[in-house]
Image (cartoon, rainbow, N blue to C red):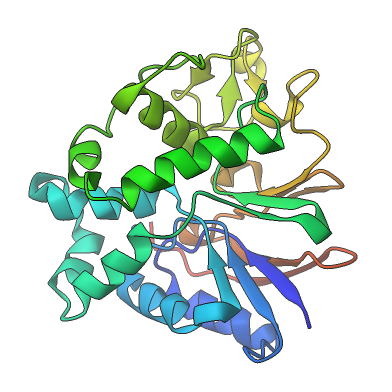
Length: 270
């Protein structure tokens, strides 16, 4: 048995197929974990969704910001990006989006002490807080009032966490944090403007995983989202968005036991 986590695919089905073949993946024996952003910029998002869904119990998926964008686009036609139109026009669109809408925002595996999330975790949230807050948001996305939230999802505010947040603002912050976080200010406020790697111009900002006394540092976190950083592999942080859609690589990491990195070269689509 092997468990492989796979970085952001973003519709690059050909690279995914080559990577899965390179892993010698056996669905009767192995598991594939997907860090989110299955869809959008690449040319074959529909095929990616169909493949991952077909894996059933052999796969675990967490939602990324582009996956949420697909769900929102279904409810807001003016937000439909060209790569998503084929999905929404497909005969099985309803089934695929229903399946996607019921995927979690985080997945924790106690025996591996490993939590998978798309972007990262607020530095003040410990493991239990993170899981509980994610479940709050999942109930909204997967519940009867999901359309109301998706129509109000697009905002960077609030940018600072408080347990007193309520309603849509609370759910928006949770989702923004888990699917979009990169940098924080010293007071814990999220910054959504800077998307590149840390540099001189971002000295006032702290990558979420470098935040002093991070409350979740006892848990290994597997994530993607920050493609400009490339692969980061240390005992507590495994970041595997290696820029497939930008023509770099699609990466998998074996996470049961010693980490093993497996990648395939990508064709630039953007």
